[in-house]
Length: 88
Image (cartoon, rainbow, N blue to C red):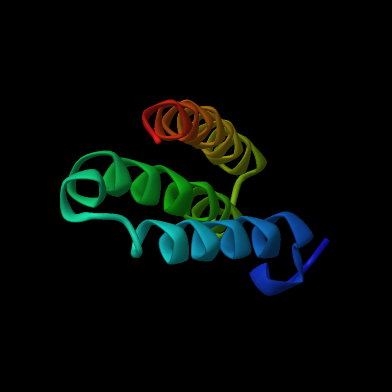
């Protein structure tokens, strides 16, 4: 098992994904950025945040629950991205 969160590939991928989302949304016009953009940024940031919080828990069951929360954030982000591509 990893001793550092930065050693987890899934965490690094989630952070890179969230950074890319921020980069794209930052270029949007104000209304899109203020409404849909904020939702996408929050949900994509939540993926890695939940992985990190679960990693920092002492018990397997708590870690597992935060992995479920992270998975929920992935599904939420997919929904927002679908809406964003339909609106474009």
